[in-house]
Image (tube, rainbow, N blue to C red; front, side):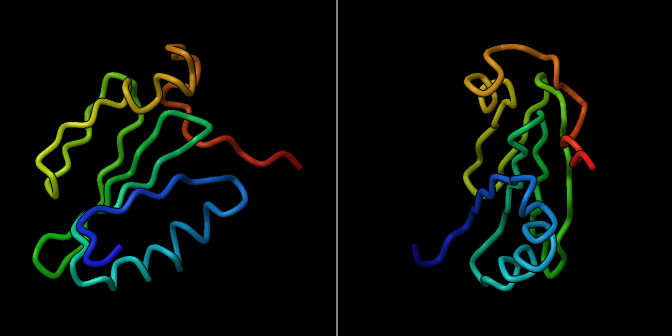
Length: 103
């Protein structure tokens, strides 16, 4: 894809640190990119990283009743819809954040 305005990255336990660090910095260097969504797969949680002028801001939501507002496409994205098939309507992981690796 050329000239993306929105990028969605689904986080995994194995690559979470890389995705939120080095890879995120690389994404932020794309001139046309206005928003990045970092989506948890093991828990309800989306972090929206968005450009305002020359600054990148972060906004995190972690409850099924939350809504992420995408300015790149003027869309409201309910987390309940994002995670409907993931947790089958269950809210047992709501607000728990990402699962921690077991030692």
